[in-house]
Image 1 (cartoon, helix red, strand yellow):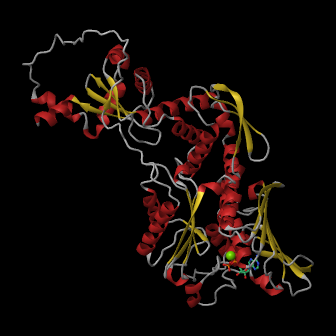
Image 2 (tube, protein in one colour; image 1 turned 90 degrees about the vertical axis):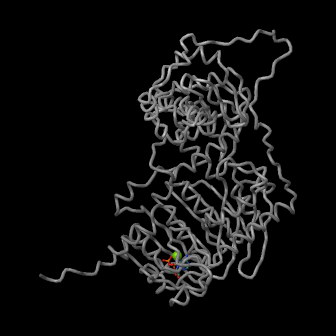
Image 3 (spheres, rainbow, N blue to C red; image 1 turned 30 degrees about the vertical axis):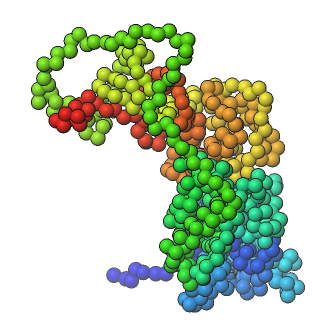
Length: 594
Ligand code: ADP
Ligand code: MG
């Protein structure tokens, strides 16, 4: 047998590495922007065509490269940022693995132009699928510009895997924001298809947040600051009253690198615990500065997780810093006292005629009739895990109960649950979950039939979004129009709404759409799911009547009727239960302890 192991050619090895480093246009942009920052740029311009699928270009005024360095920069593991393992302990640059340029060049047509201040002429290199096509001296600006054309031109499977233009553009904007937010001292621009998306001049940290998230953020933020021997924390938190119903703007940076951190996120949540309603999320933009030796720097380019050596201490420092910020700015607790602990009955109006109470008697009831052990067993076998029980109620002929339900006691507990009596026991319906299920099925039907219902607004409303949210709205425009939004683009990041879905209570169209977008964005990363389902679920979640809403008898009856006309009444679109039955058997079991 001959030897069978051989080294892969560089072009192949690079393409494999590229698969990890460059997953989509946004990852290329992130790497190129980070290189510009490491090169000391004071200005970084990003140009994108067709969401980076045709062109993405990053131009900076940083230190530039010599002719030799320019050529070397495309080799794998070529870096100017570290030279030995010890250096890993003190990395302050964003890059250090020397993989990004090699990876980009392996899967695209790249043109690099670069010039150092001290050189008269710059260098231009054209490289395609890791092969250098051309290298020549050229006259160009000080700094570096890298144009990446036709990303994945030689990896069709990857190219086909890319999402729609608006979806890829959202990823680009997200990466752009993460870099720009933490570098307010650098000016950035982003152009898409010749349109200016962001123009961010050099400013202070708060100015940068407002520049990206919108000017309204200037009043929504309070500063957080704390300095200890092991960490210094600086940044901003959103005032409690602006907390969102869905995860909003939450950014952590460590040594100017965007990270996610569940544990530290919890520190902030717990600091906010008493000042915001449950299930709402505060905004935060927090920057940590630590000795690089105390963090695990060996970060994979696409990974955003990081480990701190002194995690518990940092947790405590962060939590108290946030609490202090909330205290100093006297954002006093707006605790929502739940006065609705007891059962609430509709109050009688004074002109209501007094009627004699009636009772209904079951003429067939025989108190001496005992259930046989056999019958009891058969019944209890029906309900392990509640599935059989749920099935029973779904198959149950509700038309038969209708007049009975209408005439029966039906009431709310804590303005959250609807309770009524059914043949097999007590039915407890979670009003919010039930309404979500009803709306979801209705929206899916509208989307499938391509036919919804709209109600015109008396006064058309202009709504304005951040650039990233604008991309989301564009992505789901067809779907939300079918669902009844009469909405049209009306200038940059601005839309005009002339109609809203019929039958929904929408008090503030802008807030509704903002939350819908949030909802949709959060779902995106979930699982592969078609757009209609995504939109229908997000809309249902957003439009459902919340817990805490007091309902009239008629509304309660209606909700229960509609729930049990659904094809899957027992769970929300996200799989949570919508109701619970306390069966007679269970009552007997628990009360009589049989
Ligand atoms: P890394 O950033 O991990 O070092 P890259 O592949 O991203 O690896 O870049 C390789 C090298 O090319 C960098 O170390 C740097 O010396 C040089 N380089 C890349 N981009 C730029 C730029 N915009 N300006 C100056 N030098 C750059
Ligand atoms: Mg790099």
